[in-house]
Image 1 (cartoon, one colour):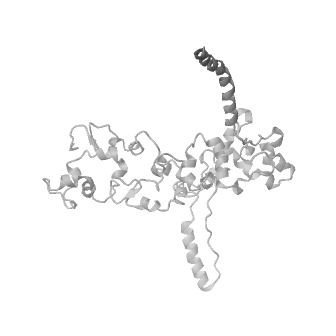
Image 2: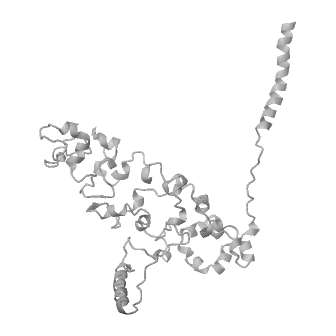
Image 3: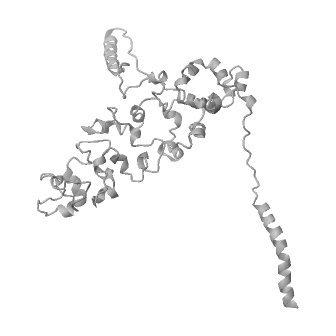
Length: 355
């Protein structure tokens, strides 16, 4: 009988344990602090873009060439408008233009501005906050002008005053005249405000064209493009964003992410793409940057060192030493390695990459 009671009592208590204990645990698991979200703006708090244009005519007049204007026409004309970025504006209008009644992006912190922009652009730039730019506090408005391209401040020649100062001013005037860009020249290196008037000329709303915009911070990289051999960035044949994703990637130097990182280079240098039967191991392990300096070099092939034998001997010095050509560690005086090993990126015939 005792054994029967020991079996029946736990069985009878099981429903009570299942029904009561989990509920108590769930109640205890509830957070003690409830996070309240800010209520969404009511329709009556919005003034409409037409009302904004009554005062901000200079911006509204040029907004038709702005890429955001295309979004404003979406969803039956209820797409992106002024108040999508600046917040509800009815209180701003009712107060006679009180600036404290509207969101002023130029007075907001970089983090707040980025959060506003990423409210729409998060899907296009999901890695921005973890990018080098995002971590360094380089925000959206550091590079982009939301209403349109901002022309560069071009220095003006000082007016002569007389005496030695007049000669000095004249020399300064000649100096500034050489710096002042000619508006008739369509040079990608020159700052231009033409995009404000011409739809489609500045789809990314950059404050200045590449590469000047990038060089304004990355001045350490700029001299490389003045070397004898360089990628044609200054000439306008390439852009920094052809290789770098300014909004962030998981690679170093914000290089664009691909399944094979060499694809950044071989998308143009197709003759080195492969696949090859006999691969050059360095290409697969270190990648193109193991041998090449992508921005510029003294070597015609953009090698990291001027002489190709010195480049090869960084890895192959034990092989080259006491070889048939007597190539030691300093073998710059003998014929080039690629005189024989012509298929340096890989070969389909010979494992020594001879042909």
